[in-house]
Amino acid sequence: MKINTKQQLDFLIEYLINEHDEEINIPDDVDGKKSLLRALMNVRPPLDVTHEFLQVQDEYLRNETLKKDLTSAEDIGEVKGKLALWQGDITTLKVDAIVNAANSKLLGCFIPLHNCIDNVIHSSAGIQLRGECSKIMQKQGHDEEVGKAKITGAYNLPSKYVIHTVGPAIPYGASPSRQDCGKLASCYRSCLELASQNGLESIAFCSISTGVFNFPQRKAAKIAVKTVEDYLDENETTLEKVIFDTFSDDSYLIYKNLLFGG
Image (tube, rainbow, N blue to C red; front, side):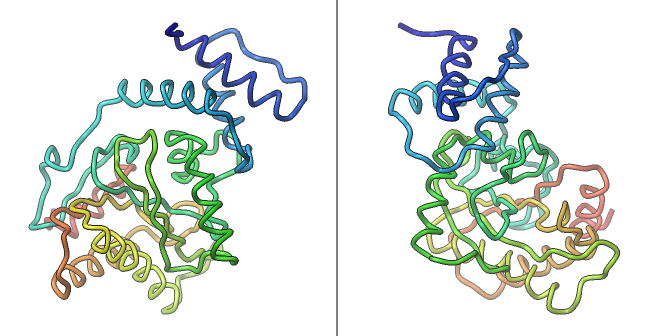
């Protein structure tokens, strides 16, 4: 029997609460239930889960994705050669891979309802994403190095893959060093190399390290554009479109000026 959104939320919330065996007040309204579910998913470690939970979660998250205004690589009109500029929510891009600005643990953000891109991507993908990241990190045996990248499935996102990279963190009030700039460039190269190795044709970059990692937006954008241009010029690649996804108006204007001169 097909269940509605409220029934899906109730089942998923009760399942996650029972894992903790604790008392949590469950809101009556659907929006409140959605926020609580996301918060519970955010704090959940990468544990085993039942097939029934995944079935209900995946149906719920896929329906949530379909409610969004999805954008494919071909729909993006601001293009310069293989480079493209787009402003919006990266989890609505129907491309081969989106890039996640991760931390060194590579397990996603554990802060409930945090607005960082790491949290947003994991929340939209589902708990399987943290599970796959955990297996990668267990096999690796150490934290992810700054400038490196890993590729995973995208699960309930409209993209096919997520490429996770760890950018340099700049202390508040400090300026990036030459080493920091080199590591940021390495993030972009590592993602492009993984995309090419996996035969991908489109990739969408977020503005790596410019959020809580404090890398200045304009300097980061210059590094991003130059690194991508150099990679495309110097390497054979399957990539046909590299998208710079911006969220804020300021970031969009910075990239627009760099790419199109205005």
